[in-house]
Image 1 (tube, rainbow, N blue to C red):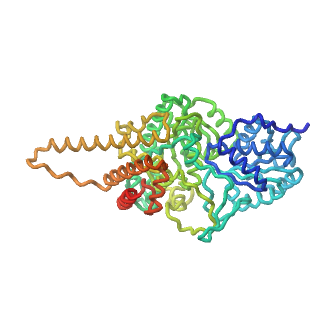
Image 2 (spheres, rainbow, N blue to C red):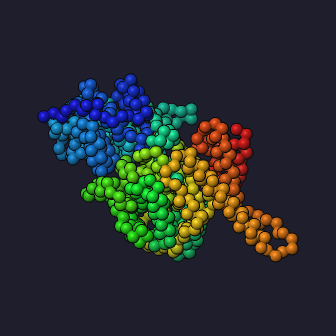
Image 3 (cartoon, rainbow, N blue to C red):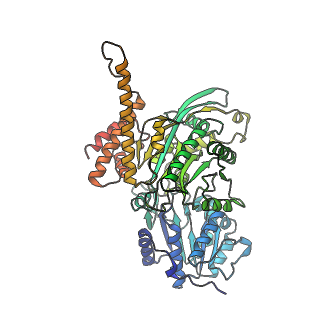
Length: 576
């Protein structure tokens, strides 16, 4: 018996962006349509509504969904079944065709790449809508891209979805439209865009606070030399990579201190109105993930769920965690993209992955809002490149073809080489040893601005930020962070004044000159206050004001900016 046509009245109400994009889709009636929407915005619901519309009016007879992972196949099939669309998540290339009980199938990009002729034959047999979820994966390799193009060229309709920045390579993504800009470079063009800033303003996603931790690190190099560096301070890229690797070492003190702070933040959220709030640690590899799980048990007294890879049983473990009230989940890459665990509200970014694509995928796990006021908190190493990504959460990126490779920012290839597994090759690699690392709250990043001064782990100053209320609007978060920072600086000035008054010198000593770090903190505070004042005058979001200052003055986000750059932005914002 053929699968029944889904009833449109069974669908949940659409959000404003979904309705607008649906109207645009039905108006165009074009073969290809690309929708870019921030994680947590509801791309799946949008795509299934289009599928139901096309099945109902006879435009298509079948639906094929292409997803990045096996777990997402199951998630897609379950979501579709709830609205009356039956998709076969167990389809294998050897099956050739799905049962008549299904409207279609869910497959992975890897499946399509291995046997594009199978999927081309299925596509040609019935008029088909193809939904390409996280379409940037079609550029992961020539095999995948060529396979997707060959398999789905005969489709009546193709719907491309993505929620993260497009790739930074030069592999064109099949079925995505490109337009040449004034600089001569080809850029991807989306038919519908719903960014994080839009979703935040409409309460669809949560505000994200980034708590960046620095600290002293010591390690022994491949040549046997012992080095020490403070995480977050300016240094060469290879030293940043080694200090970063040292901080993430499970045997040091940095990870236990950060996990303890993250668990304290999780407790605050649970007590403040999110009783089932969960935390996720994203690890670099399986060995680190297991070690972090042991640390979590030592710190909290509770076991953490561990998902190591996209293998048999991983989907069930994720589903069990999602439906439970267990506090912590540790994963490598399994939960980095598309997996829906709405109760995740605290994250620890304990991985060496640093591309904008991966970072956005990871942060996307924490932004899905269930009710007004929920916030998310992500703990990360105070590494300049990561601080820049955290400051640019609202930046929308297109896929650019032909862009020069000597881009500004951190060298990801160097980082990868510096942080590869010790078993990789050669005796020199095996001689690297992380010796020690301590953690210190460096700054809090929100809406493109940096707040706070350095605070040792476990001190009342750190607790002031860990104890921020769990239910806040975006404006309340910004206001409260500004207030906390002002109180922190005032307390420092009082302590300095008390020490000076206790001195017995007959003539008051002139105030000690501020260090570079202290000047940067003071300038960041002044800049944030001026941006906040402009926000109240114009209604422009803080992040857009900071972005405009960067456009006018140049340089990185304020979390990374030099003293000179901060002074220039202060002078500029005063003239706007």
